[in-house]
Length: 211
Image (cartoon, rainbow, N blue to C red; front, side, top):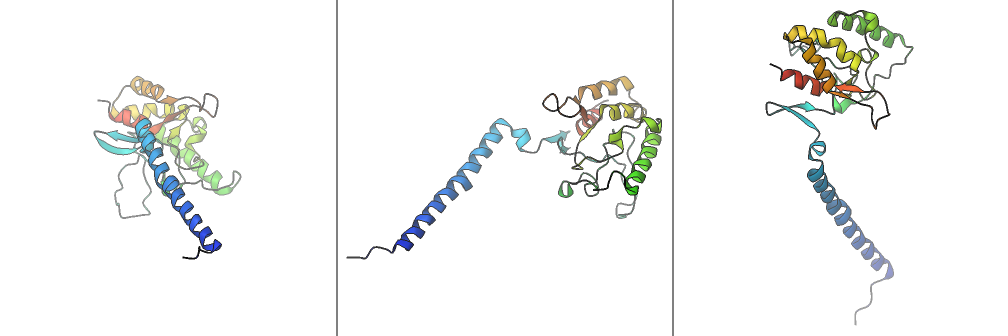
């Protein structure tokens, strides 16, 4: 007659069986269930809210992006990007070289620091000249980055400021672009948090579809 296993061995075998069962339930079954539900009920959001134009993936409605002219020398890392006047421009980004999801974050510059004050002044002058407006009228979100550096939204005021410049560059009626700005203006989160904004990625996609 075989001797029963020592209590300590039985305890370890029990723990191992529990580990295997929970691994299958929580590590395999539950993730598959959640993935299946998300794909069935929220496929677009679950897959990254991808924005497509002419059948091609051009970005995500959750992540901003730069709308610059092509570099004259793509191999020169010191060449400063030049914004393309045909597009509504996003707010500045401190995430990597701009809207880099692998480097999400702010600049960490203090509000009274000389570096931030100089950057704001430089941006104010550049945006005013680019959009052809009074520097005093440039909205704050055109001068400062969001906390994540990835926010695709700009204020309604900044979007409206850019209408005449985009209309002229594309030979489109300003009224048409104003209507698009209104169409892509989103209200406050949950109806009371923050301010309304315009998703510049979706707005520019709509602009590209104008003939």
